[in-house]
Image (cartoon, rainbow, N blue to C red; front, side, top):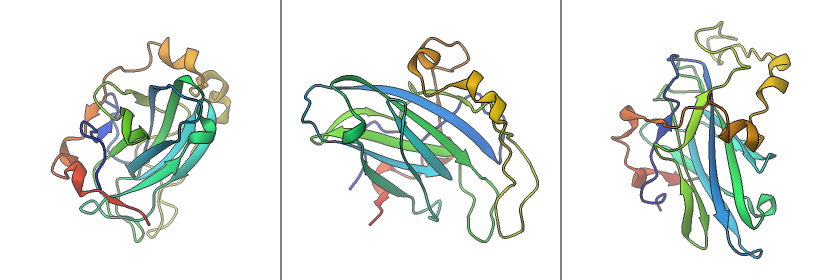
Length: 196
């Protein structure tokens, strides 16, 4: 199985960090019928958290390898309303190999499906920015086996209510164009495998 044609591995264009980076992504899609069943298929290097219409929907990623990426299929029907819906992804890129992670290239890829029709997918039009309330870039490792120490400035959260649409789509701090993750272009979308 593969993601929708046109889905691209993307990362925030304005991200200056090569390791330990948190980025936010925003997109919109329309649902026409109230009985629609809607799914998202998503993969990331390294982890992601997902919000639909301002509600936390799921999070994940797990140990896979840069040469054999896996995607999750998540039923998001209960978060959907008829008309315009909003998708938010907070993605984390570790970027340093440890005993539980093999470094790949920073990126996410997704598509949102309704009855096997793509409602939206990751592309150069996906909004993105570096997450403001996280410390990004080189930091202390918890241990040689684990990832970086986690730094989050919760006082920034109220000023950065990024799951609310008025903040996203009317804010100049968001970059309209994501960069296509060049080092992931060799990994064709069709080479993704579903997690079972």
